[in-house]
Length: 349
Image (cartoon, rainbow, N blue to C red; front, side):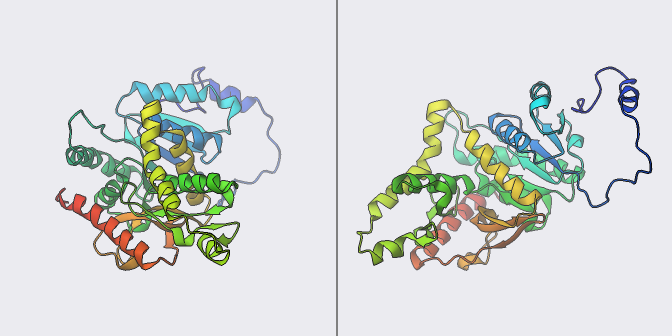
C-alpha cells in the first residue's frame, strides 16, 4: 500500500510534530458515533477511472479514496499527482496499490477495469476475457469490503454487471451498473438543444441495454413539467417522429463519435458516475436510469441486468420507478432484454 495523503514525509517524528503544533482544549468529548467516514475505491486507473476519481475528489464525495490497478506505477503516479493538488481540493486521504487490501472497508467500489479489444477480435471473445478479469477482481473486492455497494462501469456494462452479481453473491440491490445514466444525459442535452431550453428542465430517459438496443421513452418526456407529446397533440403541432428517432440515433452514436475524435470517452462518464456516487453515499433517494436486475419488471423474464429508472440511496437500489410505458416501448424493452440474455447464454454462466 502506498503512502496516503495524510501521511508525513518527514519520518516517524512527523506525527509528534503535528500533535505539538496545536494546544489541546479542555473538557473535550469523543467524536460523534453517528458521523460517517466515507470510502470509495476505484478499480482501474485508466482514462475512465481517473476521470471518475478526479470528479469524486473535486466534489468532496469521500473522506478516503483508494485506487487499484494492475500496473503498480500508474496508480502511484496518479496518487502523487492528485496529492500535490491537496491545497485546491476538499481534504481526502488518497491510497494507491496493486493489492486489494487498500480497498478494505469501502462503502462503494467502482469497477472501470476491462480488457481492450484486439484487432479482429470478436465481441464475444473480448467479453470472455473480461469475465476472466472479473473472476480475479470481484472476489478480492468482496473479501475486503463484504458490505460494499458494487458499481460496474466497464463495457459491456449490462452483462458485466450480471457477472459481478453472480461472482459477488451480493443481493441485487448492492450491484449496480452505470447503464444508461450517461445516455439519458446525452438524450436530455439533445432534446434541450432542439427545443432551445436548459437541459436541467428536461425529464427524459433512455432505458434497456447500454448499446444499440436501448429504448427512448418518448411518451414520458416532459419539459418544465409539461409532457411533450401531449402538448404537441393539444397544440395540433405535427408529431416529429423522424426528428425524435434521429435524436435517439445520435444518443447511441455519440460515444463512437467522441472515441473517433479523441480516442476515448472520459469526462462525461466521470460526471455521470459521480452523480450516482453522490445519490448513493448521501442517501439522496434520487432517480437514475441504471442497470439493475430487471426480472419481473414489464414482463421481463430471466436474470438480466438492464437500465430502468431506479431510486438510489445508502443501501443501493431502493426501488424502480413505476414509469408508464406504451405497448411499443414495453415490447422494445423486452426485446432489449432478450438481446442481453442471448449474449449471456453464450458465456455459460
